[in-house]
Length: 282
Image (cartoon, rainbow, N blue to C red; front, side, top):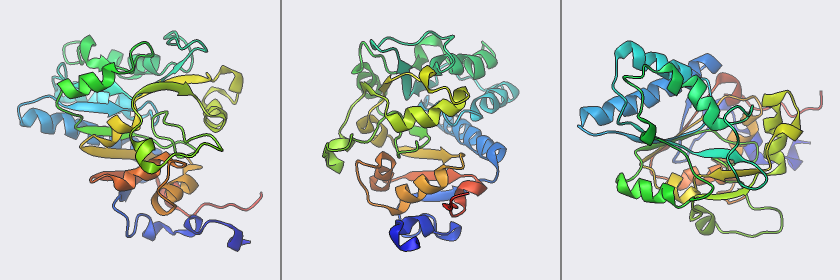
């Protein structure tokens, strides 16, 4: 049976990332990984401040658990983050490409308010003008902002079931796209793939009708231009996709595989993601 499976599915924990440019770290359980990610974000803030400047970060909502931890660290250490530039990498949209209401159960902006911005002391929190997201009515504004900031210091993120990063979905079947073409995609609105809608319905009790069909995303071009890429995986199903990302073909069909063409990329996973996936029917 194993002969019909991709070779990358058999890569053992100790060989994850071997002979690849992407650094792989195993952080323990979900709580440990969330703290690892929060600490990495805080380190970026403090490192930039020690150099006399403010950091520019692209961040995801997913993974999610790091944000309350980061807020607590900022408050405890009394770190002034008013000048920190935070660019959210994506957001769901309505069918006519409008932003969701902040009270929608899948509003990523609403989550950021509840679980990060509202938890940071007002005297320390990023000012409203530094809480940025890709706008469906002006996608090009992200590239303009990044240029005005002199680039992005670091892009944090997760990896989707089909290898997407942010909402950069792989091309639909029958559509050919080279790595170079895919890497050049800028911030834009697009359809959420069927695979992504299905897996993301887990966050709303499996009710796929709640998951929007449209989205806006920071582009591969902006992500890959960041100085550092720091990606995190904490879901059991990511054991397979992480292996495809690290040891399968570098291809537009698996967007996160393009991390392997970046000069400073890492993927941090939980213990269970690091283990070889059990693909037997149970």
